[in-house]
Length: 347
Image (cartoon, rainbow, N blue to C red; front, side, top):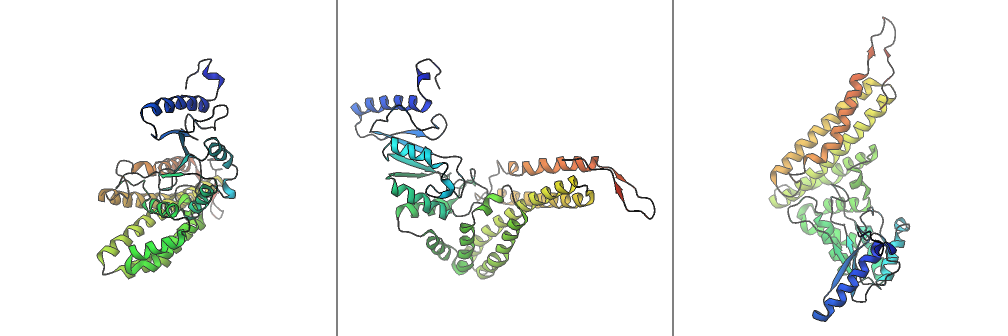
C-alpha cells in the first residue's frame, strides 16, 4: 500500500474503497450495470472501512481465512469475530458476496467431514442480514485439496433455505453407495456431527480421537465393504473412502505415538519412549506407502506434487526425538539392583 502523507490519513481499506469508488464511477459511463467487487476482510483490506462510504454500485467479496470449522456466522463460537462481518455488511448495505472455504482441504484438514452445522449457521446469518451473494472456493477436478461433498452440500443448502443438511447427506449416501448406502449414510452423519475429527487428523490428536476413527471403521466401513461386494462401481466408491479413512488413522496414530514418546522421554522412561517412537515410525512408514499408492493412481485423492510435504512435520519431530533418545545414556545395573538411568534430556 502507498505510504505517502495523503494516503496515511486513511486506513488501507478506506484508500482501496476510495479508489474503487472512482473506478465504478468511470465504468458507469461506458458500462452501466457492470458488477464490480472489491476484496474485504482479507490481505490489504482486512479491517472494515471507517471514513469512506462505498459507492452504491460497488460490492465486496468478503472472506475470513482464520475461521475454524465450528464457527458458523450465527453461532456463539463465532461471536468474537462477528463484529467485523457485521461492519462490512452495514458498510455495503448487504451487497456482500461471502467467500466460503467449505470445500478447501488446504485450509481446514486433509480429511474434512461435511460442514453441515456450520453451513446452517451461515445460512441463518446470510438470510437475517440480507446478504445477496455466496461463493464457495472449489479447486479443479482431480486436485486433492477439493472437498466435493462440501461443495455439493453448500450448493443445496443455499439454494433451498428450508433444506436439512443431514437429510441431504443421507439421500446422497443412499444414491451414491447403492447397497452400501445405509452404513455409509451413518458414516457421513458421524463425521458431520463431529467435525473436529477431521481437524485432529491433521494435528492435536488424542487417543479418543483415534478410537473414534477405529470404531467408525469397524461399525460402518467394514459393513459397507461387505454390502458392496459383487458391485464393482459401489465397491470402488466404498474402497476409496476406506483407504482415505485408513490414511487418517495412520497419520493420527503417528502423531499420538510421537507425542507420547516425547512425554515418556521427558519423564525418564527411555524404554517406553523408544517403544512409542518405533510405533510412530512404523505408522508413518505405512501412511507414506498408502499415500504413494493413492498418488500413483492419480484419482485426485492425493496430489503427487505435494504428497511428501504432508508428512514433513512428523518426520522432523521423529528425527529430533531420535537424536534425544540416542543422546540418553543408560547405566548398566549392578547384579540384584534395578536398572538406573542417567536423567533424560528434556525435549
